[in-house]
Length: 304
Ligand code: MLT
Image 1 (cartoon, helix red, strand yellow):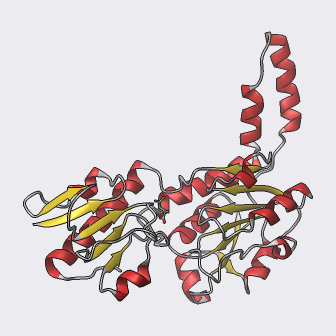
Image 2: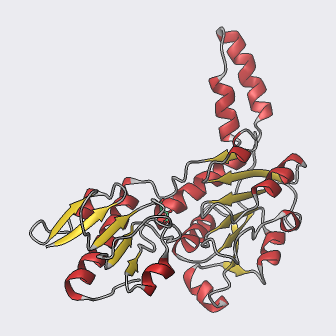
């Protein structure tokens, strides 16, 4: 019998991949063989010496001390691509929220009170106040052409946008194979200079931390939109807020709330819900449960 500890709610579809005859699964369990985790921060955790595998029900592994664990012979699995469609859809929503001032207009509409005539007048005022812009013909810069970036690029093309892509880890030819009609940028600075919207789909590393700072924001066209559905820290929030205040940026859409961002009228923050759909949670749970199960039972590594 293998013992699996769950540190977060892992979708039932994933847990169902672990047969009751062979696996005992619980959130509290002595001497576990493996851990299934979503977002719990494992860096400060004492990880039992019995652990042989960790399954992260998501793409990023920065909540897991991967080096420390692999140095100890623990296999770390993740679920690349399993939530990519969910994140893509929220990025598209983010672009539309920004372009059509939806968040501000919604707040405005919620605050309306009074008789029909007063509401009618306010509606007329709202129409003037919340004039937005359309996506066709605008350029989206996609930084990181992995499973999510490629999906975002293709969806943006379908909406009539131009797409410029940059990924230092893949060749231009490969980028072309993955995302049709994506123009390769010569580097991050070139991409920023050419993009009305920029979205990031890269992990947070020493190289990507504050990849977007005040200097780089100034390379972007005026009234550009920044979107961060990857990891907090890739964009320097203070620089983004300053650029919003100066009117250089039009909007900043960020899937990470923070005190610095919460009151700004042109910032839209979300509580890291990019991967929070029933489908994505199920896909991630199934993918990591299968990998952890196979590894414990056969020693086979299908992705790590
Ligand atoms: C990911 O890395 O794929 C996301 O952080 C998943 C999640 O929200 O748990």
